Length: 196
Image (tube, rainbow, N blue to C red; front, top):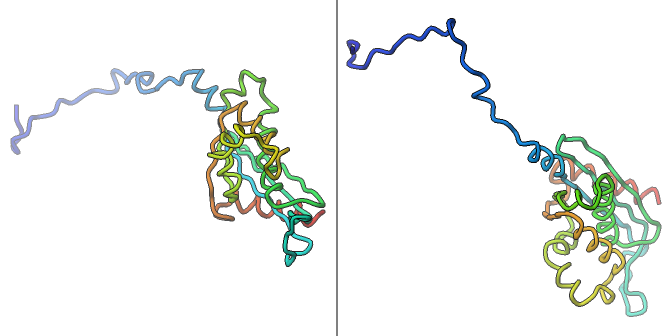
């Protein structure tokens, strides 16, 4: 039977006599997927250093610029819980503080898990340091093959290399203070530097 517009007449359903099966609309979430989701973390990091003599020119005898420094790491878990870890040193470099932020953040995350579970932990590092991002993305594997001893910050490079073997780490470069989280770690790293 058709209506005056030429369209088929719709049947009227009586919803009061039979309720729709709500269970058919619920998609079950596998417990394994839920566990893996809980193993995802975002890590926002920053390091800060103030040179004692910013006009100094490095020589072979004094090849590093040092001064008071601070670092900060913000861990955001899968439930959006935020935890800040921070620290500083009296005589350091900016790259060391950037690396410390990444190392301390990863160490803090992995401290919760045994070695087997840590293999499934996924950490997304966000940093304004191209040094840290390139290190994690590209350089670690190359430098591991030739050894870290000849590189500046060899002690920290070995530590970060050990950590990334224990879990899954990816790194992304983000501009300084480009997000609320990056602004927070920048401020805390600078506060830590000033406290030295």
